[in-house]
Length: 119
Image 1: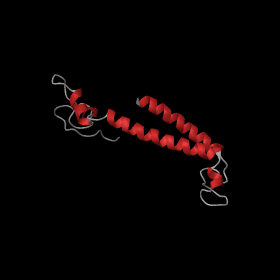
Image 2 (image 1 turned 180 degrees about the vertical axis):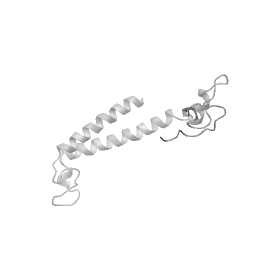
Image 3 (image 1 turned 90 degrees about the vertical axis):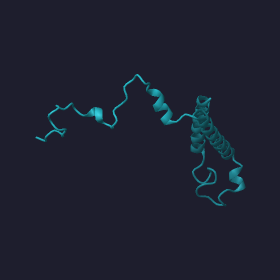
């Protein structure tokens, strides 16, 4: 279900970009920009591109909210701690306790752990 919502959101985003790019740059896009009148006059709101922009923008926001809800329901009860605990069984060896511990070169038992000398 989330894949379908993602595809719809992608199509709506590309459509919204295309509609906005088709509008006039002198205040034709949602009443933003220069021009006479107010921020949103009746003449600007009545254009087909303006109405299409509002429709696609509202649909995009609706799909975004729906996608958030779908993802939250899919992830319910699934936490990072549970996933880490499930990945190791009793018979397996646990990872190193310190981060980066496996990255150090092996040292001899008589030598202290020290970084290599700069030559």
